[in-house]
Image (cartoon, rainbow, N blue to C red; front, side, top):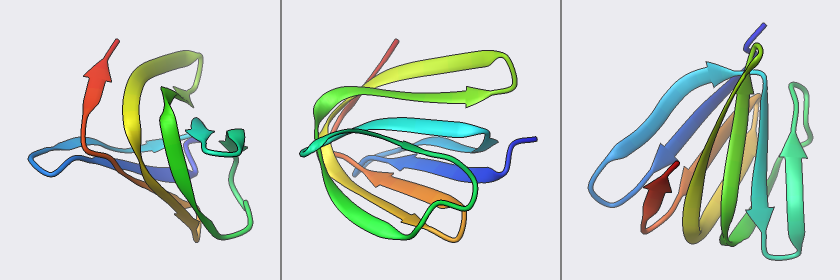
Length: 85
């Protein structure tokens, strides 16, 4: 299905740029999930695990804070550093 465009960007690299089914991220107010059709919002991120699914496969990484924007079935994460799992 893969109906969400996910981008994870650091100051030096584009870490992820792909279509996915679901995104779960560590917001400052708690973990949040995004599925296709989610309402638009912008939030600060806490340090923690960002997960995303594409079909039966799930990928994980650690983000060290940052900002996430959800809009028009696109999730953009801007973070200073990513630790890949």
